[in-house]
Amino acid sequence: MSSPVIYIVYYSTYGHIYTLAKEIQRGLVAQGAEVKIFQIAETLPEEVLTKMYAPPKQDVPIITADDLKNADGILWGIPTRFGTMPAQIKTFLDSTGSLWQSGALAGKFTGVFFSTAAQHGGQETTALSTITYFAHHGMPFVPLGFAHANMFDNSEVIGSSPYGSGTVANGDGSRQPTEKELAIVYTQGENFAKVVKTMKQGAANLEKPEVDTFSEGTRADVTESVETKEEPIKTETQPVKQNVAKKSEVKKEEKTKWWKKLLCM
Ligand SMILES: Cc1cc2nc3c(=O)[nH]c(=O)nc-3n(C[C@H](O)[C@H](O)[C@H](O)COP(=O)(O)O)c2cc1C
Image 1 (cartoon, rainbow, N blue to C red):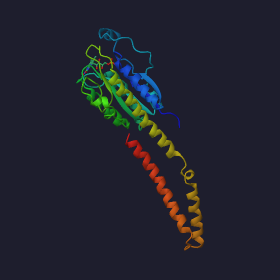
Image 2: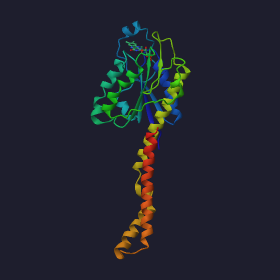
Image 3: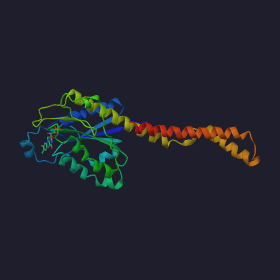
Image 4: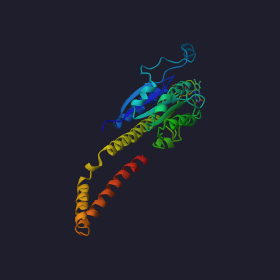
């Protein structure tokens, strides 16, 4: 099976989200994902950005709506604006109408990570404000959950929530992502890659012709039906019949195991 292709799509004014994007990439790659990072196009005029003391953008390709078709999973990096996503990200998402119409993103896993100035500046509301887009596109949202012990550590300010990982930047942007936050970010990358990988592998398995796996059982089934035509009450065919039934049970169990594995992640 080919590696899962995961896109990290972010917008960042002051660089915190970009730092998180690089870390989440490390977690994804550690789990065998092929990762591409894209940024979302700026919509503010240069004059306004100068007044905001925004540094130059990173040398990262700008995403187009059509690019999204090529990913198996997409993670979005979002710096909070008034407790929700910035207009730049909303503008980009509003340009995905034709993808919605064709169902191009349906079934692609997705998740978010974020940054706020303040500890209580809206990390959770920012994540939740993205859900309507994902629901309309039919994209399964993968939450972080309480996947890392640092999320229970109340001894200092630590960004993140069950909806995704995050950092707290301070009003002037002076605080950089801490080691504890980065560890959570990395874990989100690892867990997301595991989910997408499992889905891709499972889908590939389901596409395989079924006769290959249980060809012996299938042959016995055919033999039995031929024999049954000639001698309907022939008793030696009975054990074979039972054997076939067991094999199909095993096959069903294997498929169930795959779903269980996916749901427990
Ligand atoms: C117009 C505007 C609105 C903002 N609204 C919030 C907010 O509601 N809550 C908050 O904690 N931070 C808010 N911030 C701070 C940004 O979230 C912060 O600068 C960002 O997370 C830093 O990420 P970046 O370095 O990747 O740009 C706001 C910033 C701007 C420019």
